[in-house]
Length: 137
Image 1 (tube, helix red, strand yellow):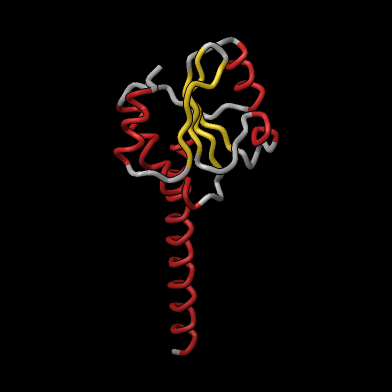
Image 2: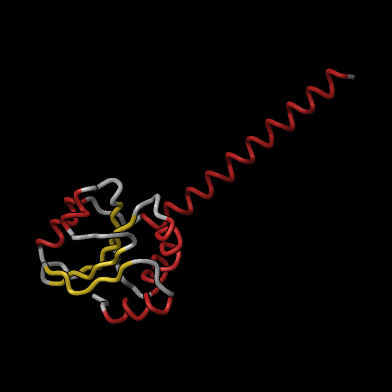
């Protein structure tokens, strides 16, 4: 009888571990969808140099403010038809100095190879919406 109880407990623990891992994978997958339109620093430099009209979202995966802003602005820009590029400053440290980023999240509008406008930090949804409407490429 003891062997049966031990076997049952081990089986329940294994099933619990599998369920936990599965849940964590789903959470990380949903996070990844916010950053699907990512560019490297070299790609971004080329887009700016080519004088593309673009919106770029500078973030860090470890930034708590970015974690709250991304689920708001990424779907918002998709709904507005804005092709917002995203760049992770944890991967591309040189981006901090190259684009004068002092904190994340930061969204910058570039036009004709120059910065036109930027919005920094965690803002209200309406504030972001007004900014995107004003800076729509």
